[in-house]
Length: 197
Image 1 (spheres, rainbow, N blue to C red):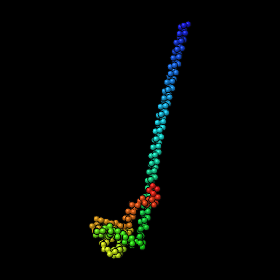
Image 2: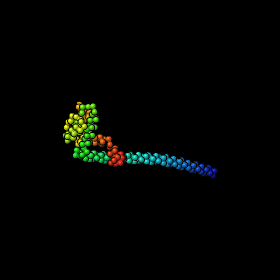
Image 3: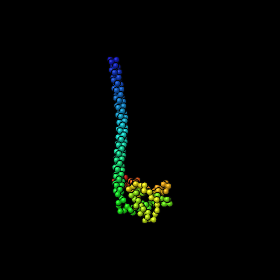
Image 4: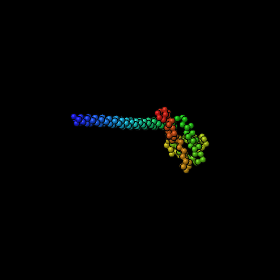
């Protein structure tokens, strides 16, 4: 019987040891699972955060591209409006010679050309349609310059030095072009209320 008790005692100790090993293994497994879940949560959070950043970046990029496209279209419309305004001005000026104010305007244009070429032998280049008016303006002011009727313009004139190296262009087309170049911002402001619409 002592032998049987010894075997039972050994079996009981072995069972107890088995239970302890299994319990330790279960604890270890639970600890590994908890650690794995924690790491998995951290990795998931990192991926989620990266996905959010990537989405925000893409959203910002798309917004930027959309704004750029809107600005491009607005700029295109503005340029079209400016060109239409310039074309309308040219159409309105096409009949300027029949306006009663043209003679005094022409006199001012002649004076500007002469002042800008002061000290030079001046040649006035005019449109044949302004020949009589130009002669009157020169005669009225006691001026005597060489006149060449070699210009086609809706109004105004050009002057050059005798050697042709210096030129003063005072045609209405040139003046309008200068106004367009210098006043694009002002035209945009008048048309649309500011450079950004």
